[in-house]
Image 1 (tube, rainbow, N blue to C red):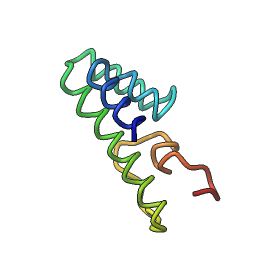
Image 2: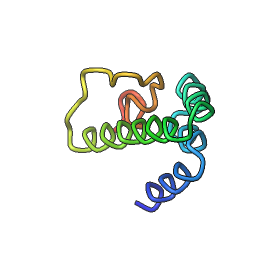
Image 3: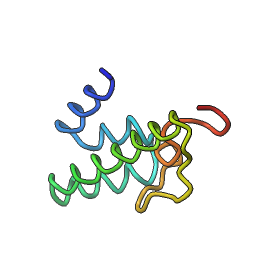
Image 4: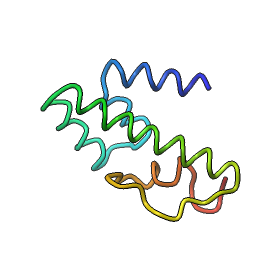
Length: 89
């Protein structure tokens, strides 16, 4: 639980850093950097949306439910799978 709280604090201070923590260096990070440059608030919305999808998918996998549809606007496979690799829960 402490890692979730730390991630939220990082995201509030600098949204691309929070996205980099959960999605890695990829399209989601690039989109978030562009949104943060265009306006600080859109960068926050995107970062918190990615974190919501990440933690929602992770919790669903832990309970045995499998998300069959891809989340809209999420390009990172790490976020789509809730931080798990194929075959592990």
